[in-house]
Length: 114
Image 1 (cartoon, rainbow, N blue to C red):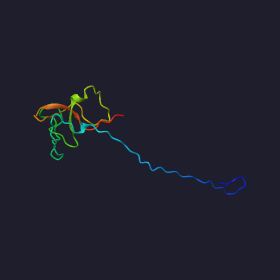
Image 2: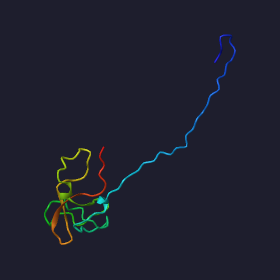
Image 3: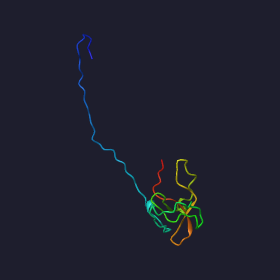
Image 4: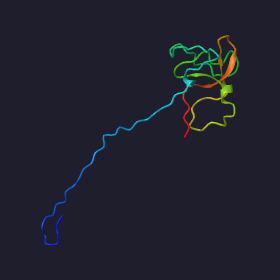
């Protein structure tokens, strides 16, 4: 930059740095492990993906796998409205409890609301 006489003029700059690290705190609930119906865990390779989760003993999910975890009782979510279009979890499904009865369940894990 030049001053009005054509001489080069330099401005001293001051740099400031922060060493703050952004943190995110995630509060977890027991919903990712709470399984009061005793629906059994099945390895992904042994899971029966032909079942659609209908509320009959022949079609209800027979256990849960890490990529298909439905074991939270549906009664826990009474009053929940319709789901969002971005929600990929199924609704109105059943799983077989520890005695072989089809019980209504929701997807298990963390629910995120904004």
